[in-house]
Image (cartoon, rainbow, N blue to C red):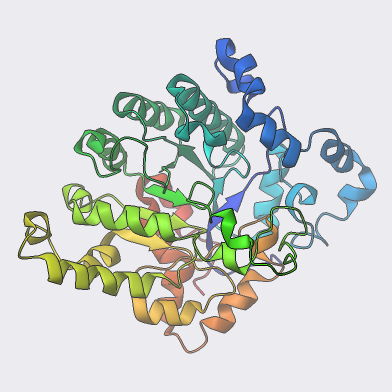
Length: 396
C-alpha cells in the first residue's frame, strides 16, 4: 500500500537536492569557470552542496535496502531520489501521489546573481538550472519541472521563458523579491506572462528568493536561539516571520497594476511560503483598493475586488503546522493546495496526517479541492490530462 493509500493527491511542492556539479553539464561552457569561481557558488559549495559523501551512501546496498521503510524518515541528501534521477520514479510510486511539482533546493535564489550586475551570468545560471531540471524530470512524466526566470532584464527574461517552455518546463518560477531597477509589474514583462498564458503554464513564487530578516534583529543581548535545522543559519521563529513579506508586496503590485487582469487565464502560485497570511492580506488589499479608488485609475479598472481576483487566479501552499482548515474557510476553497516538501526536513514525517487533522470538519468537496482539484486548476496544460485524475486513484 502506498503512503497516499489510494487517494487522489497531487503534491504542489517537492525537491531535488543538488550536488556540486549539478549544473556543469548544462552551463554555457565559456562561463562555467567564472560560475565556479563566483562568490554565490562558493558560498553554496561550502555550506550546502555535498558531493562525495552522499553518492557513497546511496551506493551502499545496505543503505538502499532500507529505502521503503524509511521513505519519509530519511531527509535531504539521505532521502531516496534526492538527487539520483533514476530513483525518483520509485519515490512517486511509494508515495502514491498522482504528480509532484519539482523544485531545486540550493539553486533557489539563483546564487544571488539577480542582485548583482552580471546579467550574462544571471541568465546563464537560470538557463542551466532549467536544462538540468527538465532533464531530471524527464525520467517520469509525473515529475513536473519548474523553470526559473529572472526578471532583471526584459529581453533576457522573455528569452529565458521561451527556452524553458521549449525544454518542456511545466511551470515558470520568478523571484518574489523586486527586481533592482523596475517593478515586477512593468509592462515590458508582459512578454513573459503572455508566453506562460499562451502555453497554459502557471507562474510560481517559491521560498528561497525572498528578502531576509536583518541580522540586527539577532542582536538582542540574550543567548543565541538554537537553529531549527541544527546548523549555523540561525533559522528561528523571528527569522521565519518575514518569509511572506516580499511575495505579499509583489503579488499586491501585480494585482493593483492590472497584470492579473491583463492575463485573466494565467494562474499564479505561492509555494512553500505558508498561507496563514493570505486571508488578512486579501482583506488588506480590499481595504487599500477601497481607500485609494478615488485617486487611482488603475484601481477603478480592476475587474473585481482584489480578494476575488486572488480566488480566481492565485493558489498557495499552507505549511503543515498551519491550520489549513482555517485558511480554507477564510481565504476560500479555491486557494489552498497540499504539499509534502519531500525530501526536506520542514515537510515532516507525516504531512497527510497533519493536514487531515487540520481539515477535519471542512466539507469533503473543499478537501478534494485542497488535495487535487486546485492543483489541477493551477497547472493547466502543465499537467497532462491523463495525469489529472488517474483511473487507479479514487478521490479522497
